[in-house]
Image (cartoon, rainbow, N blue to C red):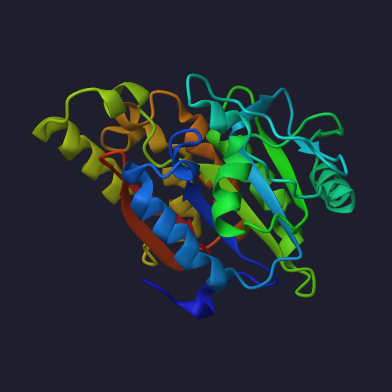
Length: 274
């Protein structure tokens, strides 16, 4: 489903499911649909001047922003083939954008922090190496906040909506998580019951994010109370991979204009474009 008239000004906001560790970059067949999707959606995002990634793999006591000029990569996964730890993605940092993000958060009463020491984790370099293999677009990464409160992450997103108000900047915002993230389920038996739970939560999430009959207060209420969704805690025993979506919604403040459905490692997943 698509509606260009519903797009946010000045840039795009995309919540994506980034798959299992480095597997999408190693030719893993269980990630084929995800890889195809990322390559297909990239042309619709225009030519970003910079990319902000909210990664499920970084949590701090307050929202923290990478501000280094040349952040290294963090291979934050274990037990994968040796080539997984030699992946390169030398995208430059964007210190000016980092400072702008810091300023927006501070101006909305959100205590934030900058770090020029932290690098880019696989929540950034795995999808971006597929989408923008030349690694020539400056990137900034933003942490989640410990405690993982959904309302707090929507509030962070609302504070960052100003990033998209200047059309000439064309900042792309990516919430890098996974709409299904039960690690045991990936490696356990798939039954009618587990498939039904996976499908029920996906249907709820798609409806919540894209149903135009919902008012924005109703949509926000559903996202804040996501634990009430069908099979919520089966699909997300811990919500770290869901909350980048809350930041994205806070920025966009509207129904997603495009929904993507696909499978990763035998589980139904989804992505959302505003």
